[in-house]
Image 1 (cartoon, rainbow, N blue to C red):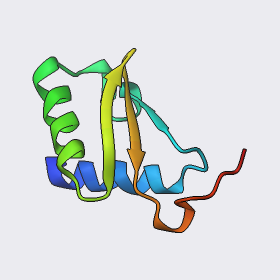
Image 2: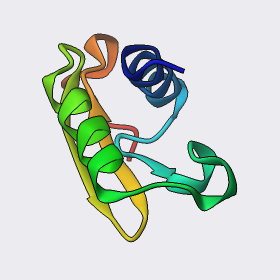
Image 3: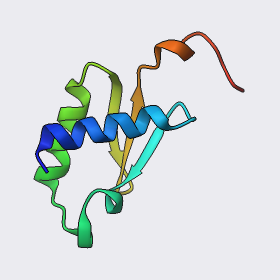
Length: 78
C-alpha cells in the first residue's frame, strides 16, 4: 500500500472514532511487527501534513491522532 493511501485510511479511521483522540497501535498497520523508525516517521509526518489532522504524535508503539471534526467543534460529549 502506498504511503498516501495508508494516510487516508488512517485519517478515515480517525473520523469513525467517537473519541477526540484516536490511538492507533502499530500492530494494526504493520503485519508481523515489521516496522522501523523511518517508516513510522514518514507516516507521522504525512499525518501532520494532512489538511484534516490537527496533530499526530507517536507514543508507546501507537499513533496518537486528532482530526478536525467540523461537526463537533465547540461541543463536548463530557
